[in-house]
Amino acid sequence: MITANLVLVAVFLLLLIVGTPIGVALGLAGFAAIGVGLDVNALQSVAQITYNSISKYPLIAIPLFVLTGVVFERAGVAAKLVTFMQAIVGPRSGGLTLVAVLVCMILGGMSGSGPADAAAVATIMIPSMQKAGYPPAFSASVIAAGATTAILIPPSLALVIYGVLVPGADLRALFAAGLVPGILAGCAIMLPALWLSRKHGFEVYSSQTRPPFWRAFWEALPGLFAPVIILGGLRSGLFTPTEAAAVAAVYGIVIGLFSRAFNLRAIFEIFADAAETTAVIMIIIALAGLFAFAGSTLGAFDQAANAILAFTQDPLVVLCLVMVLILFLGMLLDGPSIFLITLPLLYPVALKLNWDLTWFGVLMAVNIAIGQITPPVAVNLFVTSKVAGIPIEATARWVMWFVFSLAVVLVLLIAFPELSLWLPRYLGYLN
Image 1 (cartoon, one colour):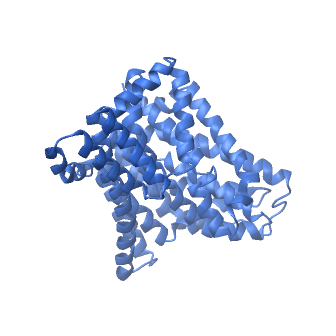
Image 2 (tube, one colour):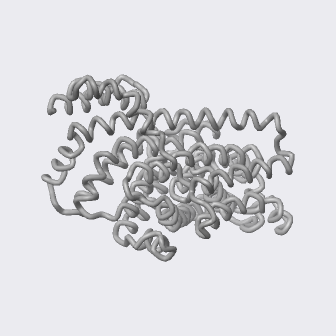
Image 3 (cartoon, one colour):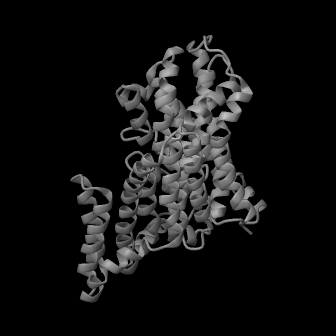
């Protein structure tokens, strides 16, 4: 078994080093370990194990929420939300930074994906911010940071995966637990963005007039209503998280057709784009299931958990070590991949230390959000830098302010777990 466990880890790390896609590395490492440590019958069941990893009802929410995000993007919701937020904020020093973050937060309640959120907002906001005097690197940093809230504000694709992988986790509780931290993260980003804007004299005055409030409100109302449908339906018990995703997707298509943002022919392209994104996610989940089966069956994850606990029994020290590990992975990988790689190892640790699994899931999500804007990879920052036409290195001066502010939110959530747990308790999702 020791040999098989070493094969599992060594093959996975070797494949990552040579640049193998994360899903393929997970699957091949699991297959190699099963071949070394188990009998022929186990190898014959590899296909069934891989299929079982994705044949789970809650995972249906992933393609539906992906479809919802694509639909609302094509329906021009982002542009209408920007106009509405400008009507609220008005022309003031640093006002466009507030608009950018607020729009990111609302769109995050539709797409559940940080990079998708960043791309949609950056395309609209960066040209406007450049005209108002904001440096492209600063604009890219603000929008990338604002888009990190998509991993917290429901529906979060990463939290959907966490809820499926962690036995006993309630997806409704996870969504509720992520809402307040998501709002805290948004506020934590807006404060330094506004301060930096005024300190450096960006947008001292705005030549743009305030859009008419009620007209902007009515045009943005269909987009504003989408999060209400998702959260309201979950709270009322009218439908499950998976059914909420289906309702939101259909609602978005109806809105797009009635507003003539796209036609029936364009719906085919929307479905094709959503299917392509979903396929990538599901392939990774399927192959990660093979990796998780090998690690749990061969005892690799239990041995790793025991090694961590042998180093120290202090829950706070262990939690800090885990957070550092996740932050490092967040700098290199996307959120769903991090959950798929680390949860088989961290779940036994969380159980032995009696951590609340809902709270721990939110902590992981906040940490991954920080990694999404921390170089060298920083997926959100990569997207916004590409839209702004600047090298990612140019954002380092600005983005570290937002890394620090999000780190403060993480510390607060560790020190005061009820910041994330009080809402699901109040709604009756947790005891």
